[in-house]
Length: 107
Image 1 (cartoon, rainbow, N blue to C red):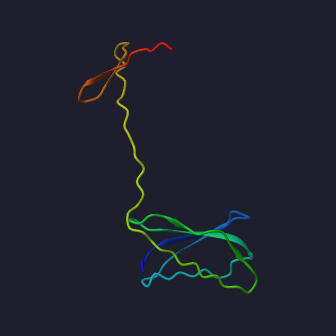
Image 2 (image 1 turned 90 degrees about the vertical axis):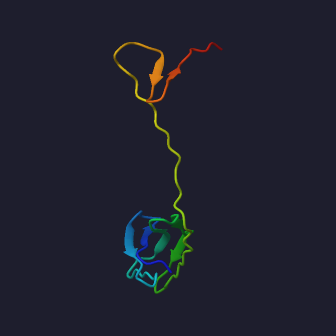
């Protein structure tokens, strides 16, 4: 059970969203949702985001959607591009370590 998980419920027909947060027992509840099709997502720092499959909510119906939170947020790889030195035209890019030569290639 994970407390303070951010829950987002999205009506896939209208794109309206409602938000909730799980309590210290990891429980959440949203009341008064109109009938329709919904997807639910759960997010918490240090865990991967989890998305439910689409669920149809009918009149006078309760849906229970439980999530299994996995430790370890997904990390997108990133790279930094060294900045060009505008002082003179050049075919070099510089970073703090060494120059990188750019050579034109012919097909």
